[in-house]
Length: 87
Image (cartoon, rainbow, N blue to C red; front, side, top):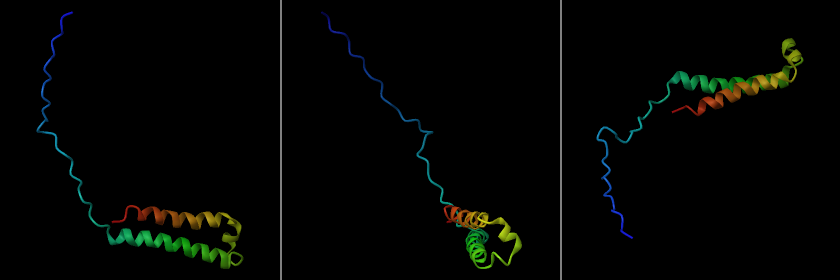
């Protein structure tokens, strides 16, 4: 049986237009961003403390009941989420 011809493979050439992407360094966060981030965390903490200490004295806070915990922790979580984008 005759042997088949071996085909010569073409050399792979790299396109000169393609480059390795360079990561651009982001600028540091502004002072306003830091103020909002820490402000939301402190606001959530203060809201929870006020809820535990004065829920009977503040009418609308007593009527919300357990939703006060949701509100306080929501402020805290939003502040913590902002820390992930802080530079």
